[in-house]
Amino acid sequence: MWVCILTAACTPASPAFPMPTAVLPPPQVHISQAAAPLPMLTATPVPVPSPTGLPQTPAELARAMFGERLMVQVIIPVLDLVAPVVPVGWSPQGNDPVNPEVTWDSPEAQVGWMLNSALPGDAGGVTILYGHNNIQSSVFKRLYELRPGNEVKLVTGQRTWLYRVSETHLLPVKDSDPADYAGFLRTGRVPHLVLISCWPPEGNSHRVIVVAELAGR
Image (cartoon, rainbow, N blue to C red; front, side, top):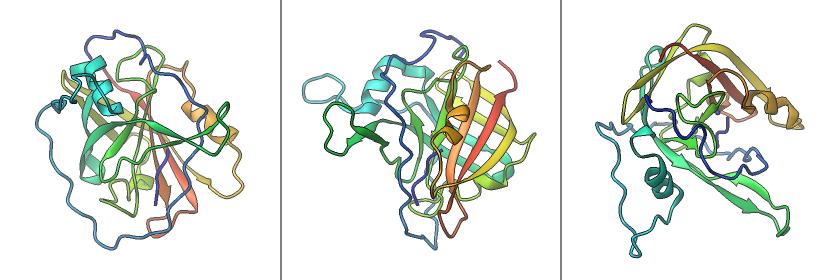
């Protein structure tokens, strides 16, 4: 199923990417019985130059702009989870060239960082990560188990940032109001992290939204 639901130096204050109108991607009805092992990362990914020498993909663009500030891993000790993080962009949908709907691209077997959300340490920013729960590696299959006080660590090329879970929510997908999600994704609060997936592990009737607050700098 498709998931959705989001440095030491803090410049720039927030990523310089346009903010599209967020549309939560529809779940994919497919259940993986065996989760593939997640690759371990030990260093910041090195961008592969395009033939023109300019960034061509969202991931290449993000790496060119933010370098060592980018996340490379998310670690959730209580879930025994260590997973790679990749910058992920969005794609327009529909036939309206003026106001197209937008859906987020799939992070495949990894955890996706919404590249128009904040990086760890950005003032007043929300960092949004999302991943599948029952296809690919099923990386966020157990996300719904997180409870207040559980630790989440984000590893960048510069340092590790510690967050503590403050809220875990299950919101229905069918006939849901986008406003139900908006408050979790809005900037302006103290820097925080939002993790998004689907639920239950063998289905996709709800979204899991986990909010975690920055525990230390």
